[in-house]
Image (cartoon, rainbow, N blue to C red; front, side, top):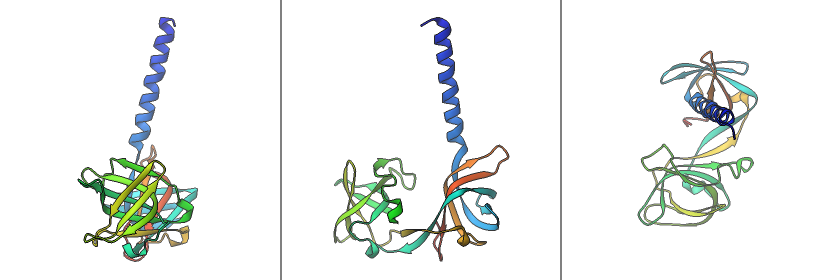
Length: 201
């Protein structure tokens, strides 16, 4: 490979790295309360100030509904943010029950969940459930293995349900995990979650 080819390849690699970093910087979580709705555009009051968010034409609208550990059944697909315990189990910090249409979403176990120090995320199907003094212990099975998840009595449990834009109204609490920032400072998103009742997503 000539020096010019090497330099060109290095330049392309640098450009790719910069574009990747830019894309990562531009995607962020947006959460708050809807102030008003105009078509596909939501005006949101967030902790950091007002946010303008435009939803994609085919945006996924997900309702978060309050649930309990007793609502979790064998075969349910769940996502759990937790903390590893010395015995290898995971102590749940929060748990979400997915609808069948979202089964397989994020399947697996991985570190880096930001909801707690040393946090992990485990997504999979519920197998056996046993009782313990600390609460139900779920065996969550995923493609490469399984984890035992302890769900204490104070762990918030939410059920996710598919919804439509008619429920996105003024006063609704909403959250977008990956909103894309535009050059004009507004955001776009392909999915938004909102809370039914007093649930905050």
